[in-house]
Amino acid sequence: VWSCHATSGTGGMIDPRSALYAVLILLLLCLLAAIYAWRRQHSRSAILIHKLYEAVDQSGSAIMIVDLNGRVEYANAGLCQQTGYPPEELAGQSWRELHGDSISAADIAKISALLQSGQSWEGTVQNRRKDGALYPARANISPVRGARGKITGYIGSFTDLSETHRQEQELRGAKEQA
Image (cartoon, rainbow, N blue to C red; front, side):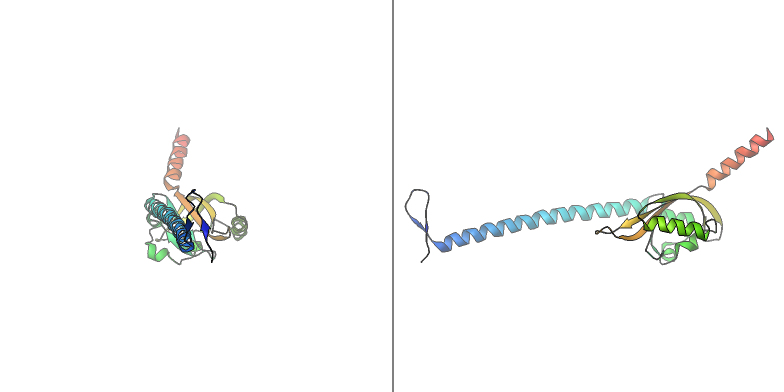
């Protein structure tokens, strides 16, 4: 028979089952506290993810996410407005269909190698609207890494430079006339 002696100075015995139940209850309380803490953190993460999604989706900046094969997985309202494509037409489309021929095959290979090495690329490109019109855009493209650090796709943001270029041409014209 196993027994524990009380240390409170009472000289009494503690029932082994009571001690075991007390330990089990303590372990259960610790487990519940851990689950509660995890759920709170998970809930905060879910709220943050939702806020990030809404911020990107509602941003005036043109943003798209492509998979490793260059197919559009996500296009925000800013990109749809800039290109004239609705999101459902952009989904699954190759990013190459959205840019003009301003980037040579050799430059595309260099940019791809840079991105695959984990670095970002920034530069000016000619993008194509749904109606076929080309427009200048400032592009910033970065790799997206998964939880284990492996590149899972790419995110690009594009700023339409049409108005800036038009103003520069007007300024040049005004200088030439002066």
